[in-house]
Length: 76
Image (cartoon, rainbow, N blue to C red):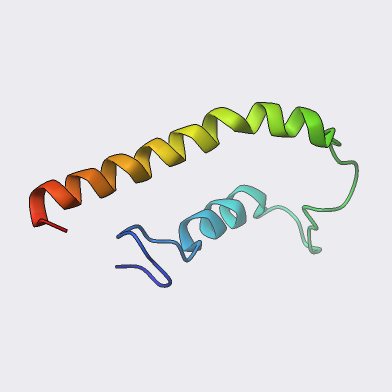
């Protein structure tokens, strides 16, 4: 189990961090590179909530399926 895991999934964020670092790492730059420098994308909170709903439902469905399978297999 990963650090801070509650459902058998690794939740420490190491994989995400490594991917981000690899994406912004530049061999040809002699000076440091700030990935947060420059413009940003602004999203309205209402639009973000609408777009995020399928991910929220999928997470709830996954949790329900995992709990149901654990109860069936292990009698929990």
